[in-house]
Image 1 (cartoon, one colour):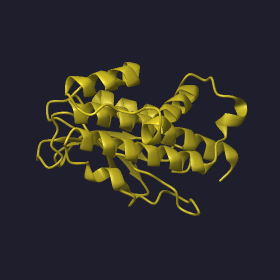
Image 2 (image 1 turned 45 degrees about the horizontal axis):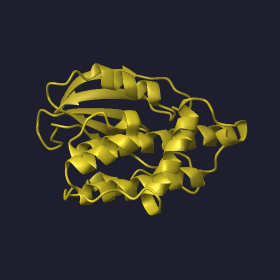
Image 3 (image 1 turned 180 degrees about the vertical axis):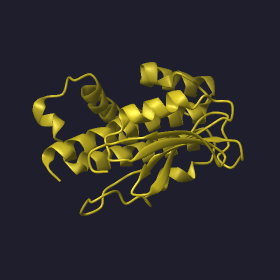
Image 4 (image 1 turned 120 degrees about the vertical axis):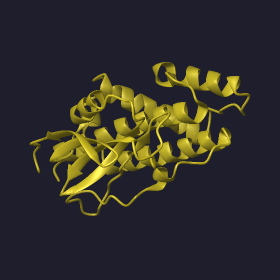
Amino acid sequence: MNQWDRGTYVRWTVMTAWTVLEMACGNALAKGGIGRSFKRNLDQAVHDLQLPPIDWSQGTWQLVTVLQMQRKAYVHLNAKQDDLFPTTAAADLAIHVTREAVTDIYRRASKPVPAWLQDDSDRGFDVRPPVSAHACVIRAGADSEAPDTIRIVYVRDGSEYVTEYLPADTDPIPHVDALVGSLNVPVSAVRAYRGTTLLVDRPLRLRGT
């Protein structure tokens, strides 16, 4: 893997980790729109539920602020050129911080921590040693076990990987479009299912497929 590919995958991991963190915090606290002013809105949501306040000065949540700054630099193109070629350690740290923060916020809200948070079963593609993370988001109102739940998946090396579970009445097209627009890994298709019924099949031709 050259530095261009590695940098792309690491930046994608950092941005995806942040998105997962925002969504998970919103789900744990039943609060929408947390991401627009993350720290302020998260503190307010915790206060409104009369939960123990977050200490941003140390530990996991201090690292969350570092992750947010890194993500902002990538999204808003403010990063220095050298920062566009981060090592895989940055991806590992983003995953670790996200897992710790999501675990903390669910426990703080006295809710079970999602099982997908510790899923390391996806070994990635042609990476030695294998370094990969696969995140799946369960949207508010969706039941991953319900027969009419909508699943958004991508296809890689002949296998399907679920990225989102949506309520049955959700229009899947915007979610398919969003996933296609964010992909930086070689996948062959993005699909949407309601139960076992295929709703959308979007073939892709990305480098490496």
